[in-house]
Each structure stands twice: as structure tokens, then as C-alpha cells.
Image: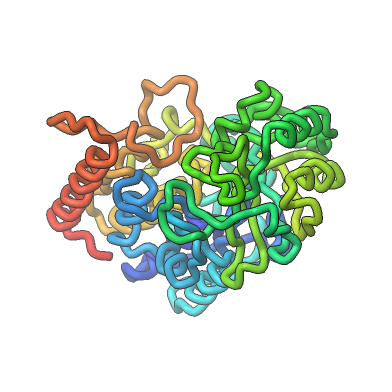
Length: 438
């Protein structure tokens, strides 16, 4: 029986292992936890969510929704768990992160074809194929092991938002609503008037930031996870056009749109914990409590986890990888997860699905696959392996990487739905032609 070594039991690693085992391939899954943890990971479970508990939009006529459809069609373990342990979040798919990870961990551990090896990988293991599914916090030992294959890794800062208790929110200064009335009243909105916002802006721009670790020497910040204080430093109104945008909301107390608005999202199924949406930060813990408590609704907020900033490492994929996630120099070595430059939870998990499927096909003597360019995952795979991309930066799901429709449609939502429907149709046809089953 063929054996594939999968390095890392994060979102990409568990998806890769699951796909291989379903196809009768023996898997040796290497995970350094619980013997060793990265600076941001705390749980011993697999597929731990660190930055947020949201997997983004669910509706099909969104890039995130189309990607979720692709993953479910391919038999995603991550989507299976996410839908089982979802929590209300308007139009987004958010999960109880503990139950989500526990379910995936048990599924992997109970699979007789998957052997768990709890140790840090410092040299590539012997196997018929290897999938390196490291996340943004790959250990120094693993980085040194893959440097001969990839050269020097790149890095940028990634930041996580604080979590507070639901009971500590002053609801007399907040209101329940989803933006544009999409979904139920799943968000707690914390409005500010102009005077309150200007004071908040003044305090956050002078708040003291936490020192970074010795391995975090670069100052490149990925736009999609920009620390709120870094965004504020760009100008007085940048936060009001970002995570504090009041558009689509009406404060029932005034009958008007707030000057600025912070949204809180459920962090767990019970709704006892709340995430400050878009408030990734690297402020010192005391400063976070002082400054974020300036929101009237958060004046007595109880912080159960403060925001943190950590390193994100990824390889120069356009020079190194094929669109099937295999290494140019050695087709039996695959990469998956954020180390490839796909950005986001579902994007990382989806890359693991394709790496697992393709490793299996390679060992069976079949042609490896890249999904159609009209699919989010197919387009992402092509993007990260496109040699014409020079200043390579991580890419998440978006309709901009898909080819335009033949017939132009002015209405954006109608256009997005047609793009999604095209992707669904092309995926079904592709999988049937290539005899791929979930």
C-alpha cells in the first residue's frame, strides 16, 4: 500500500489526509502539537482557528460562497464540521471553534488509514509522496528542512482580534442588526457619534503597541488582516471606511446612521463570547482594554482574549509550484495551506483537498488535476503558480481572479450569481469527465 506523509494537521493538512484515506492511501500525519506550540496556537486539537471564527459569506453569489460549494462538492471535512457547528452570523458561516476542531480531530484520529505522529519535522520523511501543509507559523525546524527546496521564505504580519464576554456589553448603548438586513439580527452593533469617534481616533493613534518577537522583524502587513491601529495611522476616516463603516445600519435610538460602528459577532454556539469584527491588533493588552472600552457599549467590556500579532510565512509559489500544488523540481512533493500563498481559512483547506487528490492520482499513475479557471479554487491554483506574477503576495477568494462573463451584466448581484452558476456547472462537468468522486 502506498504511503503519503502529510506535514501539519491544520486546515489544509486534515483535508489532504482525509482525501488520501478516502482513496485507500495510507497517511502518516505529522503534527508537532502538543509537544510544541506556535506563538499563536493554544489548543491540542487539529484544524485550530486562530484569527477569527468566521469562514466568510455563505451565499452562492459571493466568492467565499462559491468556494464553499466547490469544497462541499469535493467532500470537504472542514465544511462538514463547519456546517455542523455553525453559530448565527448573518450571511456568514461562523463556527464554535472548539467544537469545530474537536469534531475534525476525532474524525482524523478514528480513521484506520491515518497514523498520527506528534513530533516536529526537521527533515522530510521517507514516503511515496509528501504534502507540506504548514500554516503561516511554520516551525523553524520545518522551514530549515524545506529551504533547500524553496529558498528563503517570505513573511508578513498577521493579527488576531480580541474576544469579550456577551454579558459585559452595555446593550443600552448597542443594538442588534445585520448590515443591509441580510440574515437575522446576528450582530451586536456598537455605534459612536462624531465626538466619541474623534476621541477614539486620538487615543488609538497614540496607544502603545506590543513589541514583536525576534523572528518578526519585517513590517509588511497584509491588507486583509491589517491591525486596526495601523489602519488608523493612515488617516482620521480610514477606520470609518473599513471595520467601523456605518453603511447599511440605522441606530434605532436616533433613527439615523451612526457616525462609526463596531460590530460584534458570536464566537461560540452559546453566544457567551463575542469577537470584535475587524479589530485585529498588536496593541499592548492594557492599551486594548483602555482604548476599545471607549465605545459606549464596551465601557465595561470583559476581555477573555486580547488581540495578538504573529508571523506569516509563505513560499515564492509562482517560481516553485505547479497549478496542481506540486513542486516543480519534484512532482512527488506537494505544498498546501497558507504557506503556498492562498490566504484564508477556506482557501487553505481547499488547497489541502486538491493536494490530497493530486498526490493520490500521481501515485496511481493518473494525470493530476487543476479545477476549471471559472472555479475559485481553480483560479487560485493558477494564480499562485503563475510565473508572470512578480511581486507575489497572498491571494484570497474573489471574483476578480475569475474570467469575465461573455455577456456583460450591469447589476452586480445578478452578475455575481451568473458567475457562480457558471462555476457550479463547469465544476460538475469537470469532475464527471475526470471521474472524480467526493
